[in-house]
Amino acid sequence: MKNTATFSKLVESSPDPVIVTRNGRESFAVMTVEELDALRLEAARAQLYRDVDEAEDDFAHGRMTEASESQRRARERYGL
Image 1: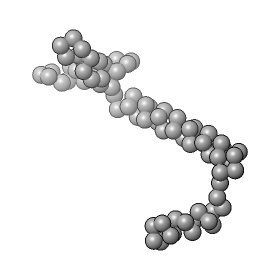
Image 2 (image 1 turned 90 degrees about the vertical axis):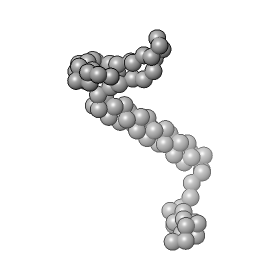
Image 3 (image 1 turned 45 degrees about the horizontal axis):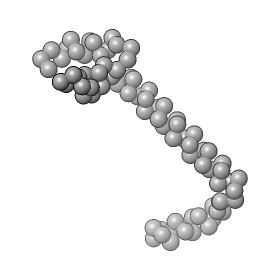
Image 4 (image 1 turned 180 degrees about the horizontal axis):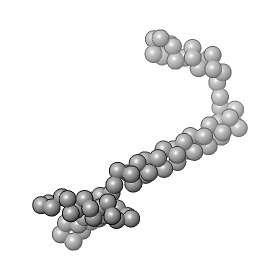
């Protein structure tokens, strides 16, 4: 790539990621840092929702441990 300033302007002005091809095939995508941060935040939220759903299911099915018992096990396991 010889003109990174022009390419940077293209990426910054595009509402979507810019797809770069090599030999007619998609090779990689380029996006702004803001778009990447938004994707990371969306992925983190999705993971949080999955974790909450799993915790609610565990609670509903009685798969839980008292905090004191959990701490005791952690101390034994990790030598704390």
